[in-house]
Length: 216
Ligand SMILES: [Ca+2]
Image 1 (cartoon, helix red, strand yellow):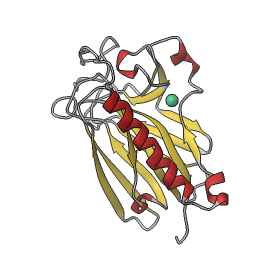
Image 2 (spheres, rainbow, N blue to C red):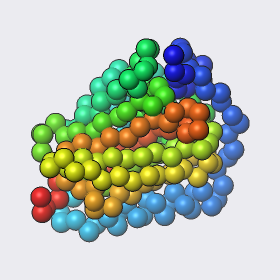
Image 3 (cartoon, rainbow, N blue to C red):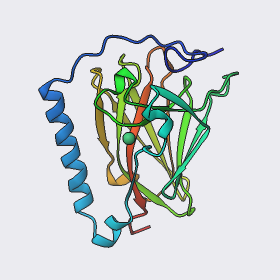
Image 4 (cartoon, rainbow, N blue to C red):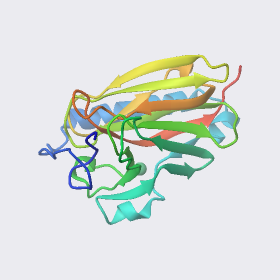
């Protein structure tokens, strides 16, 4: 049986480590990431930007009063769907877990999401069935441990794929990933949870997504 996601929860194998307070540099870095994402959004036309949404998981109210709570294998919001799938050799799929601010490694954050088993995949699709573009999202070390690298795989409507690795800095806290235009006009966006051994677990938040940007 593969070990699973968060410490202190059923079938979880992770250990919590001490969380360091965010440094001024980390705060500055976060602000710079935020500015970058805003620049990306500002480069779009008004009509395009008006259709952009942020999947921020704030509707998962159970995480307002609990460190974590169970979500299930599907999360749908604002025209988009996230699906969890356990690794093929995983006999005990767990599903998505909402992460609240009471979860220590989410200090300073807001309600976020975790695919709660090793090597689980998360797949983002648009409920319209039409191409969509992912502009940015936030990642953090789920248990404040390292290393964490998240590989994103975008699949286009013609079946071709684009890939990008997002290594985290190893310091507890949120980092913003801004996607290049190769990640516009996708049919699906997939990323994997770490293997819990050489690649530790991550949580995610604030997925900035919008309908496909012409040309298609
Ligand atoms: Ca949030």
